[in-house]
Each structure stands twice: as C-alpha cells, then as structure tokens.
Length: 240
Image (cartoon, rainbow, N blue to C red):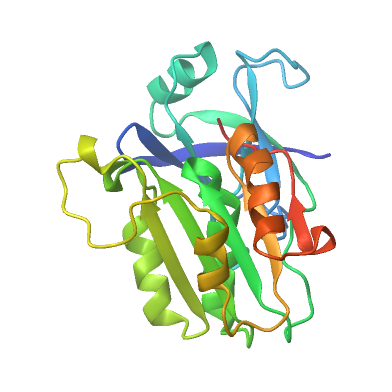
C-alpha cells in the first residue's frame, strides 16, 4: 500500500451518532468504488495500534475531488481523537485496498444489502453509477433501526431520481423508538422481502455489508430466497 499526506477539510453529521469526514484527495490517489483505506493519526505512519490507525470504506466516488469516510462515533481512543481533530489538520492515508467491487457484466443486476453503516462501500458504487449513467439495474436493500440512524438516506433518495436504473427498498426495524414518520417497510430483511424485491431483475449478483452478525445472518436468508451462494459476495466490513 501507499502512504499519502492529506488534510481534514470538513466533518458533517449524516445520521444520529454518525459523522462523515472529508479529506483532501492527494495527487495520484486512485481507487475503485467499494475499496477502503487506513486513516493514520500522529507522526508514526507505520503504527498499527488501534488508537492511531483505523480502516474505513471510501464513501466518495472516483470522479469526486475529495475523499470521504463515514463512521459511527463509538467511544474509542481513535474516534475521540478523530472527532476532535481541528479542520485543516494534517494526517496520513494508507491505501487504497479491498476487492468488493461491482461486477462488470452489465446484463446482470446488482443487489446490495446493507445494515446500518454498512452502506458506506455501496455509496461509492452508487454515486459512480449515477455519474456515469451505467446501463445496469441496481437495487439497495437497506436496513436500520430508525430513520434517524440511516446514514445518507436523503442522498440515496436523490440518487434514485438521478439514476433510473437504481432503486432502494429501505426498512426500519425499531420504529417504536423513532420520533420520525416512516411509511416504508418496518420488518427485517427476510427471504420473502428479498424474493419480492428481486422480481424482474436479471440474474442478480448480491453484495452484503454490515456488522459481521448481520452478514452471516443474511446467507441463510438469501438461500431461502433461492439465491445461489455463488452469486453472493461479501467482505469484512470496514468502518466501525
């Protein structure tokens, strides 16, 4: 991997308890949608200590001029330090890496299944697809506890209008704890949900990202929906 020096440009709230961090894109930093990078704080660029280095999926798309990551702001030494970093501060990026990329066969649909902040690698893919207007059917099944927890929900709705080949089916599983209205689905992503959502999509390939327990739980769900395991792709999720 390659080390790059960058600066923190901005941070913004993208869901309750979830921040997006915007970094200056270093010259020569090329990546593919779905890839990840390490963010390194402090002077020791070779450190592998968790309070200094953390891996994040890249939220921004290759056509964009900045690099963006998003994360739940859990109480860890690294995230406390990152959250307190003054705008304009220098830091190091190590990467990119990872191979969770969208397949090239445009005749086959892509179905993304995201749990919570697992949406991050798919944001890069969906932004790029809308920018290029790729002739490929894309579907996102997006599960959160509440609308307040759903990162990038507003932007995903905008991407539906920008890309006629993309659609989103979002579900909220704990609406009893929400103060917002929600007219969509309110149950878990089960086999019936998947079967209904995939109707009419040509020979789809599935991609899963989210908490490890969620990723494992989705495999029997997809099997129950008649999905061949060879058509399911996942990768250790980066970004917690």
